[in-house]
Amino acid sequence: MDSRGLSDRHSQSLANAVSALVQRNGRKGESVGVPYATDAAPVAALGIPTVVFGPGSIAQAHTADEFISIADLQLGTEIFHQIATNGLR
Image 1: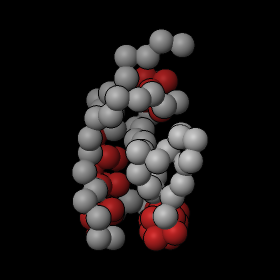
Image 2: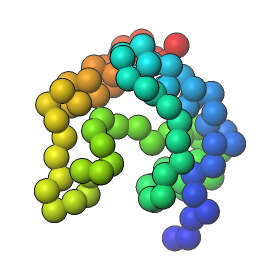
Image 3: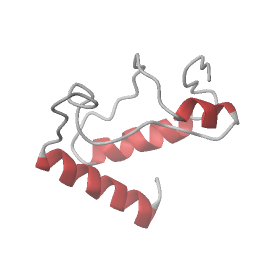
Image 4: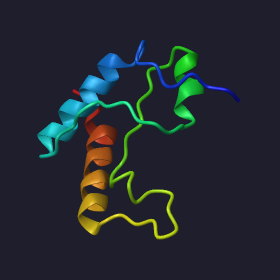
């Protein structure tokens, strides 16, 4: 499937909420464009607010020696727990 990328047309408020939550947890939490594809673009194309978010660095993802630090895993788990229990405020 061809994709023109992940538009923020329907997702800006969701991206802002995720960024704010990440910032409250001590990280930068910035929204950035990236030069890789995800399954998020077709979802967003349906008008569903969509962001790509996860712990760790993309520099280590999808490599022969892929890894994530324990600290990043713990922080990511905590942020996902906060979203599941409190939503995005």
